[in-house]
Amino acid sequence: MNRTIGIGVIGMGWMGTVHSRSYRLANDRFHDLPVRARLVICADDVAQRAEQAQEQLGFAESTSDWQRVIDHPEVQIVVIAAPNFLHLEMVQAAASAGKHIFCEKPVGRSPQETAEIERLAREAGVMSFVGFNYRWAPLVQHCKNLIETGKLGSLTHYRGRFFSMYGSNPHGLLTWRFKQGLAGSGALGDILSHVVDMAHLLIGPIARVVSNRHTFIRERPLPIPGQGTHFSLGKPGDPSGPVENEDYVSALVEFANGVQGSFEACRAIFGPKCEMSFEVNGTAGAAKWNFERMNELELYLPGDDGLHDGYTTLLGGPKYPWHARFNPGDGIGIGYEDLKVIEAHNFLLSVAEGAQRAPSFADALRLAEVQAALMRSWESGGWEEVKG
Image (cartoon, rainbow, N blue to C red; front, top):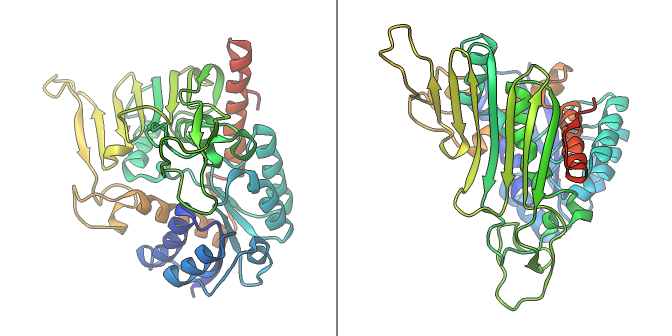
């Protein structure tokens, strides 16, 4: 017998829309499993956007009051796709109501806020999940399996980065992402969080770091409330305001298992569109993955005869985790929103089974402890221990 779980989504911008489609598509792509999602109610402070989302996506109801999502008796999962500065208040309300919570990253604007959010969910006994969707790529999961089964030997090096052009245009609007009081950190929380999560997934805990930050574009045009996204552009001469957080973060890292590595993230670089990528080296092999070519994995596993001593490109296909849920062919790629469908499916199972899966708020807190060490290093200029 199928269990149906009611979904309420708060924030109907791009990401809220993606999440809504993902729960609907999870019913299709994982149709043989005994859990279903039902889109109950969506909320946005712009009433027109909430109403449009209801009509477009098939919610039973819509509202401009996010508290109604949490209070709704048919909602079991609350999806928080609202700006960062609202996360704590919304999580507190949802946890108090006994609702399971999905929250987009960064969960908190600061490590302290993330710790409070994790405590609220844990003490309420609700399931939690975080939007680290890149970990769900089938070839990333295959690389994880190669590492866990020892195919790459003992790991020695790891390099993770996320380069994105979304903030490279100086006419890009001064949205909440660029304001410290609303977003918290900049590139650290927004995109380096994915880099750290991937490193935790593939390599394990981080022991210490030394880090640097920089802001390349210090002023941006002011946005019009309720219009556009963080990709929208203003015009020369528009009223502008100061950017309050960092465009760029770099770090050297030492993992608890002795692996040596580096992290780098920038939202204002010119060239890479969405280069969320990693390289990992071991004593028996190596692997490279880049989200811009997410259906490929560069793998180095030389044989004893020396005849294949070079990187080989693996193409995505149904033999890798979850790929067959989307298509049956080798070399036929899946896309970004498919990763969100896999993500939604895993959270639905977590709630249905009553067993917390990763990445939860506990994983977000572990990441926040790394971010805290990175920020301490910005001030000290030296190596900082990651405090667990």
